[in-house]
Image (cartoon, rainbow, N blue to C red; front, side, top):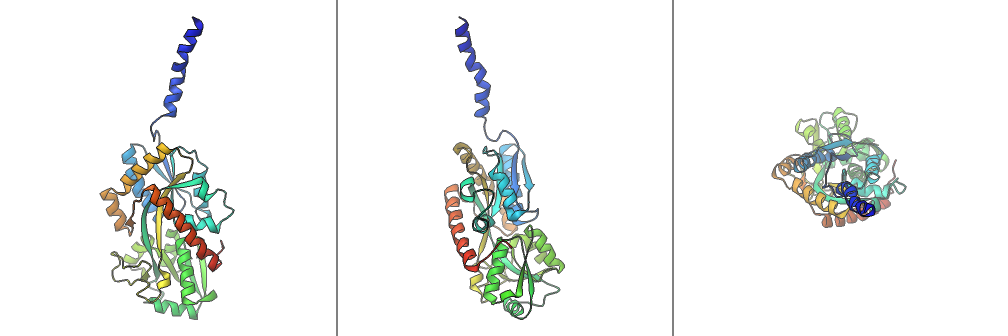
Length: 322
């Protein structure tokens, strides 16, 4: 009889463990790690989407800025976090560049992280200080680059602004006349350009639009194939005679690759609901983004293609993490 009572008691003892194992996601606050300082494009989009996810889940979504190491510090923290879906990573094209630029990174880009959704895309803008730089066209800036040394800022080694600066250097045939000055994010580099510490940037549009609208920065050309509604008077790089400068940046949300399939599906569905929300979309477009909101399959294929594309440019240009 005692043995039978033990057998009957066992399921009751195990029930709380099973309930915890099958607890609905999320069952607590979610960390959304941005591997850049506040104010940059990745941070802007993460806060928009994170706020909506908090509404959907009824749980806090805490934005945590962990800048440094060209986004490696924040990405590494997510890659090594518990694979339960409660830690998200906000990332840009930088992630696909880092896969080639940092072969000895502390985590494996392809194995340890997976993409939930590409949220939005955006062009970059060739900008100069409106007060201190007389260039009013891209052609005039090209002439400057041929005649004197210029300091070009970026949000970090291998970042889209860095690659844009490299494309400009090659298009202008400026050789060593352009010195790359990497920062730990887009916002501080744009601030220094507006303050006169830099000569030019190929900046992400959301990061420089406020300074452009305030008259502190002068846009010379935009890197998209078509003009942008926020800057309709600014020509494309193709219109300005430099088609090789065409490029588009993007931002996505990622999680550890070992997150269980049911949680990945929930993350995908809720993230798509957040980015496709009318108010979120409006605010993103006002900030310079084109809303994408791609599903996992399309996002995974896109990130793979981007990794291969930028690997070729890095190798051809001989870029290093200087």
